[in-house]
Length: 269
Image 1 (tube, rainbow, N blue to C red):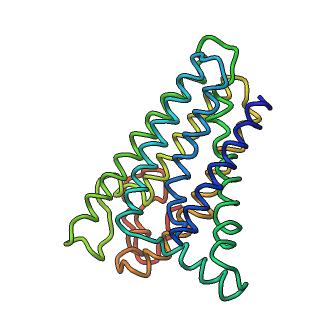
Image 2 (cartoon, one colour):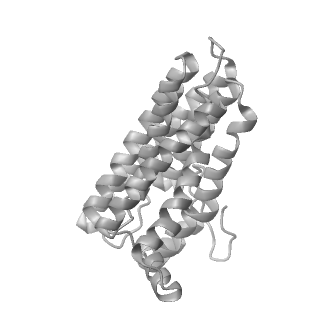
Image 3 (cartoon, rainbow, N blue to C red):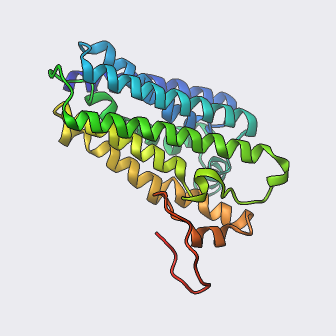
């Protein structure tokens, strides 16, 4: 296990160094969001090449590839269509004006180095779940497989619905509250969480419950308390007049029937 993780850390470092160099040439690190998913596929593939394929390895790598390729290519296309992300533009401005940092230093220290560490930790179930001497799936692995497949499909449908909604000029400035977005404000994040807790369950069945646990725990924190909803919702409240009402009546992550709330009723979590 340690040997696989060390080799994968080296692979990750080389890939991130190359991605950083590209960002300097483009003066835009926004494609890191796409590399977040695609890089986990690379780590999964590196693990697969170092292990003897068994049922756990085959299933975990297949799930990782399905999740990462779909999401990574979706985010890469979105970046190509919309250009530099406002979040990274704001960070770059702060690094330059407050700290006198060059773009290369900002990109390396504020974007790519932290993302490399976070990506590696989140990817632990995708790596450790493949390392097992068990030749059969236990009930926990079957549960994880079911949950991960559900998460991949759920997230894919949510992203597809949002893309269709945004492609209609008539929806400019409106809140997306249709389809899966009617029942939670972040169905894409909910699908992400289901996928990674499902992969964790398979890793636990493979015998790595403790070592793989930081992965889904970190992802849950990032999506719910740091870089997910906390960065998107303030922008939506500023640019979508109806977003506050949508927030009051709609669950944050877990799909739930729309609530009929009075003006002074508490908001759902």
